[in-house]
Image 1 (cartoon, rainbow, N blue to C red):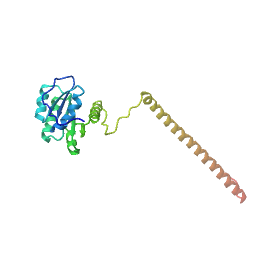
Image 2: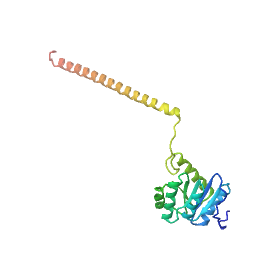
Image 3: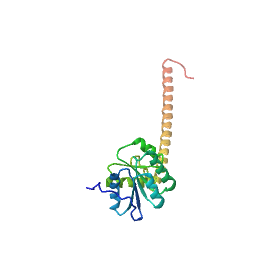
Image 4: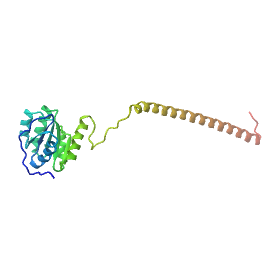
Length: 207
């Protein structure tokens, strides 16, 4: 079990290829995410507010940022605007200790796409990173409908199947029309013959 009590150093560790920025209002939440990445060899920096985060971003490259949704709303939006305007390559995951759908909808208008809710366990962090990767590739969030991919062979075959279906329907319509005309013709002939027989029985001369 991870001890959440040890204090978190706000001094930046030596920068590596992938650098993680954690912006959390509570040190316990920051510590859980910090441990996950530190144990995997990432360089992690923790900030408690938007000012500290921006100061670090101004001087250091960052690949991924975990930002607390419970920061003061104006400060949170200012940080997202800064990232959107000056650090477009930074992947953003918004964290929350409890659901706040209204806040999430607002933050989506400022570029936030992925939301991680407590508990901040390893499996959930990995899922959200994977979700962000799918969004970057143009696919939809796992919470929404996923794209359906068709093999090339199927893409080629489907138009021909559709054409064959149209030809079959057209052929069936033509045959049904011919059958209908044949039945009507036989009916008229039978009607004429019946009328003629009736006329003969009552002695009406034929024309």
